[in-house]
Length: 278
Image 1 (tube, one colour):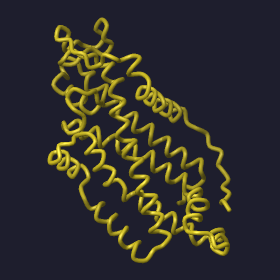
Image 2 (image 1 turned 180 degrees about the vertical axis):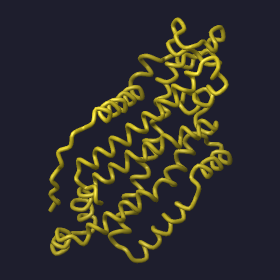
Image 3 (image 1 turned 30 degrees about the horizontal axis):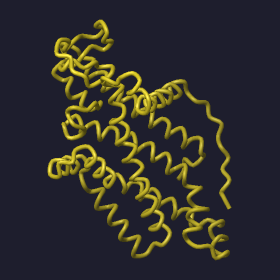
Image 4 (image 1 turned 135 degrees about the horizontal axis):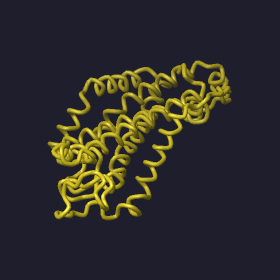
């Protein structure tokens, strides 16, 4: 009883292909490259601090502690991506559970879930993450947990809206006439028809999570001072703009390009799905 959707034939712009390739390259850096190309990224060399771009043995120079900037970029891909992916995945799970049940059953449960979503959306996410990290002192993973909670209302609303739209369709009425359970209908008939929209939002949440976690690291509330991270590298390089601007600029450029590439992948999936109107 799956809804048949005719995919559109779309010409993919070269810029989108390039940026999508960049995202795959970032995944490579995250999973494989640190151990291969930057095992000593955090090693200090006080005899070679603040070296400019193009220095011998240091393509992008070094920072104030003598660490190689290029190796820091490679090593920082892990902390830069694992948090946003966890945020998007956690938010997705909460959104699927609460959004689907609220959209399907309605009534009092729907009011409770909607009230939770409205209340959470009214909170300033970045400020709350800063306060939580400062009070609890958990740093990176506390920030990830706070972001999961604060991102979940968007997924809840999206899934709830999609389920409400689907539950009135003829194929759902047919499923009800067969006395299928609510779990069966949601899992086997509704979810496949809203999966692409949920997947697109998953990619968007990764991009937003990357910007949020990088911002927290920039403020000194993300990863620890002895760990590699793009946001912290962006912050540490502010004092070196005259000696080696690559410390900050390289991290900032990589953050922007990665976020844009993730957004474009999500946008392309939505266009290909033919579900732009949901």
